[in-house]
Amino acid sequence: MGLRETKMERTRRFIAESAFDLFVAQGYDDTTIEQIAAAAEVGTRTLYRYYSTKEALVVSFVENGLDAAMDAFLAQPDETPLSEALYAVVDSVEQTIGANSARLLALYDIFDKTTGLRAGLADLCWSWRQRLAEEILRREGGTGDVLHAALTAASTMNVIEVVVQTWTANGGKADVTDITRDTLDLLHTKAIPFPSPAVR
Amino acid sequence: MGLRETKMERTRRFIAESAFDLFVAQGYDDTTIEQIAAAAEVGTRTLYRYYSTKEALVVSFVENGLDAAMDAFLAQPDETPLSEALYAVVDSVEQTIGANSARLLALYDIFDKTTGLRAGLADLCWSWRQRLAEEILRREGGTGDVLHAALTAASTMNVIEVVVQTWTANGGKADVTDITRDTLDLLHTKAIPFPSPAVR
DNA sequence: TGTCATATGGCAGTGACTGCCATGTGGCAG
DNA sequence: CTGCCACATGGCAGTCACTGCCATATGACA
Image 1: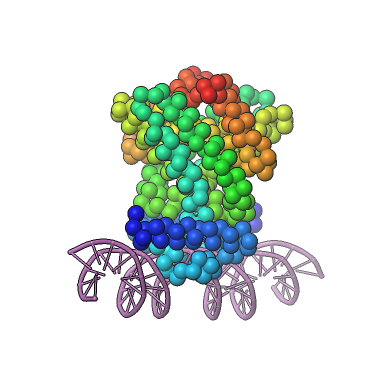
Image 2: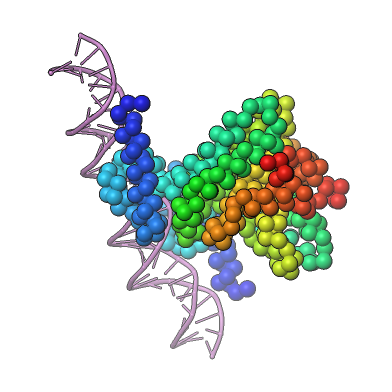
């Protein structure tokens, strides 16, 4: 990697860090792009070349975590059972949380202090779920059922969301592993009451 | 209801209709608030008093459908089994789709032509899910498990999303009832491969 | 060292959204 | 019927996120 690229990578990170600090210090809405650019020592126009949107500055952190989870899934060879490959995803999320707990708590604090931000997060989860559904389908060699892939991907995303939400809800005090175990247990023991079509 | 309120209700609807027509005709991004206000014969300032955001003009249609579904859930007496009450939700969605198919197709066309809009939709689904989780919890008299309520609400939302998505995916040609049946069947026969925590 | 691709940043412009204030109109008391 | 009041309306100026355009600076490579 040339000097140019490393420098750009550093700038990219520095911008996100500066933004993060400002958001924590004075809130998302009360922080302008100009302030962030000034703190990161770049022009606003340059900032927009790194992060196309103000929202992206916050969402990128979560995005990194989800990207890692997707990589973990893709790293599983096609031979391994789907359930195991999906476990790798959940496991990756668990590790990400463990490794960045302090920052994640601050991040989610920003999220629920700023109503408009939730949309960006929700959208990120949505596209990640779409991507996972596609990969599940591809993994099964096109023979798989589209509905099935969609539901499986959605369920996986649910687990992640519920775990993260539960974890942040009590200030990150509970052990992520415990929460994950409980959630998977609940899902696995089929405690979700949903009617069979026969009910009708 | 006084004359004043009916008039406001009519204005509210007229604004949304005008916006919808313009979005269909020339796209979401290429339609300005001024144009919508002009078409609806109100000032832009007044428009913002009815819909706080441009996004809200589109999302409101979906919101109405979800509100109806929530009402259907709340209408079920606490004695009926949860699974049956949830079925009422899915059923309501099914009816909404059946009754507004043409408009819904146009609406979802706008949605996937406009990348930025998806966030608003995702967010709407997110808060609706939250609300449902709370209501499930309340319904069980506070004795219920929070994780369980969250997962159940999320699963319900999944079913709705998957059904709607599948339905719109092939231009609304397939029968909604069939799709719903298939989806519920898939969920009910527990074809979602997810590992038990014991796997670890 | 010269040249080129590319990163940078300033500037002007657009459009969503807000606060403030003047004006118009329905609802109600007298 | 009339006058008063609460409230709906709309215009105007201002803020801020974001974009296209162009001039300038800088790493990469011959």
